[in-house]
Length: 118
Image 1: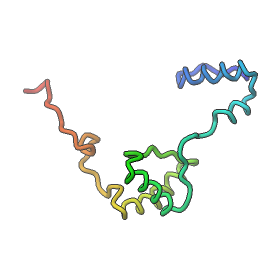
Image 2: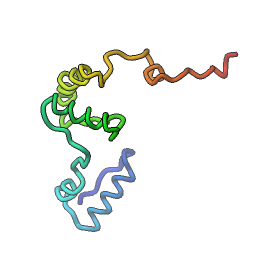
Image 3: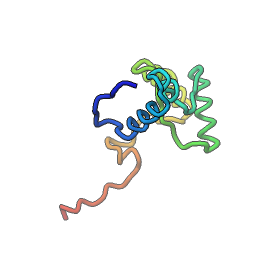
Image 4: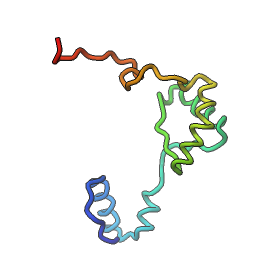
């Protein structure tokens, strides 16, 4: 394993992976093969099939939302927004409009009183 330049990003994860690679005498390729993949649920299929899976998870309360990752950006994001989102909206599983202009508005949270102005 080559020396890795100092960085402020993901220091603990980097240290853990480097220690593993050095302990087991792994090459960069071996380390990438071991930890470089995504182990979460992968939804693959047509927009309708992906929406079906998402709907099933939501309706059975297997989840309350999704963190979506794309194999490519921006193409994967563009495809999802153009193909899957309209299908979710048709099923009324994804909003068509936002509640307001702030995250607090979108989540329906009350704005706290301003402690500096009475």
